[in-house]
Length: 388
Image (cartoon, rainbow, N blue to C red; front, side):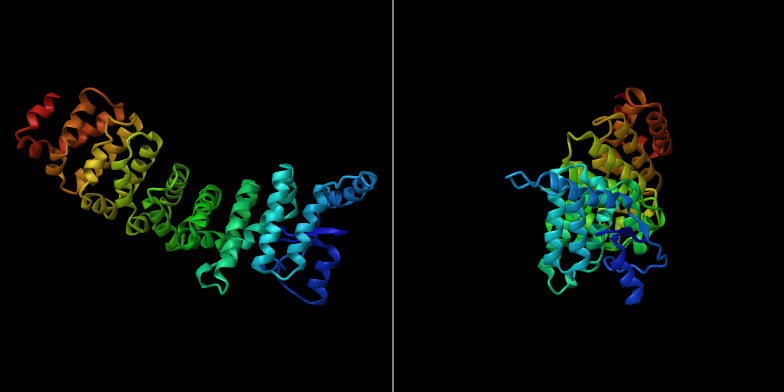
């Protein structure tokens, strides 16, 4: 490049090349992202220009050295952009360029900011986004390898919240849809990368992009949560995704339909040490139990009520408060009085009121006991529970 400019999609090109593309060939889309260009303004990329101009000076200074020197960052970044924009896009070429990006970032962390300004981050995101149906591509193995590498590199680039929001919302959330599909259908490696990326994306995108999600996202989250070999980081990323999207649209129903309540009950039964994980799962159960579908799924699981009761006064004050809220919701609507007595839930509620628990937990426990005192008083063990 001699005169780099940036177009509305965030990608930088040499001025003469992009002008030829737009004027001579009368193209109306970005050469790389294929996104329609409503605005054809060419903005000078002065940062990239300075980097390009600095390379010849540095090269002359090092010409007398006998060792082979690494090119200045500006030249390397422009090389990457030129390779991707000038050549025909195909998985083999993409992987080569992505590995070069990875190498540049690992060699010099300052390259991350330079690449974001030059549009490299946007380009990497577009490589992921264009595989909207990865299982249907002709060269599936090669295509998925390129997507895997692109997701890994995108995480390595650590895009700013502004850039991540921009690339995620582009073309009606195409990147989110692709990641949702990969979360469900991709290789194990790509599913993990997709989970970690989606966690970051849902923290910055607008409401609309959380409300209209592909069903694959929920199916993928549940399938990975079922995997006992998943790392804690992956599990927490998936739970964070659910926290971000549950309040929007019909996502509470979709989560229940995907089987998330069953999985969280089983994880609660197994988890004995991780405080934060327990608190997060109880928070999610509280949220879905605000709907009839969520309460029905919890009560239908043989260990549903027992799993929640088991965390009262066992994990933390926050977990106790969340667990009591869940029990309040199911006790009010689902007729679980006998089960609550059988699994020790009534005794736990008395302990919250009499001995431990925050004021909020105590008030909720009192409310539950007040609602069902007549039914529970018929059980022989009720008086002993009260004395605990």
